[in-house]
Length: 187
Image (cartoon, rainbow, N blue to C red; front, side, top):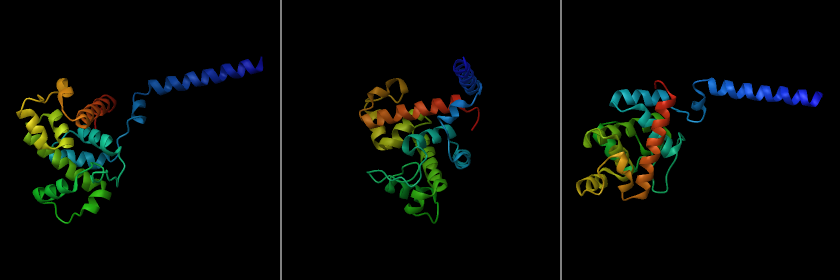
């Protein structure tokens, strides 16, 4: 009898825990955390880029882990290629920043990555799906896909993107973007 009573108590405790977990409106945030919120928020406001988009790109690129370097040489949280980073530094006139600093300093990497997203937004008339593809494959390739009718720049036709890596990248960023927007009321 005592064992049965203990099992009932444990079951009631477990069910209560699960109910509290699911009734808490923000329980999904445990599975989809956003790190570096202050840095993302500041750069988002500065360059007028959706903070959830920035967070989604960081999630896909590095899962918020600093000092990452890809096999191809992309560096930091937002995985900027060194040539692109140098170009951004020159265009944005950001002084005294080294590639080593970009690799290890989240705030500076987010600043450059967000500036680049703003630049892509301007190039592609604010089309976020095209921006995401261009962030991954490069604006030249994406422009040629659009110009040659290979892809029309919409999420519905993302399957037409000729690079599997870019197609999958766009899908993943949009997935995380949608999750973040559902979970978090504000950034």
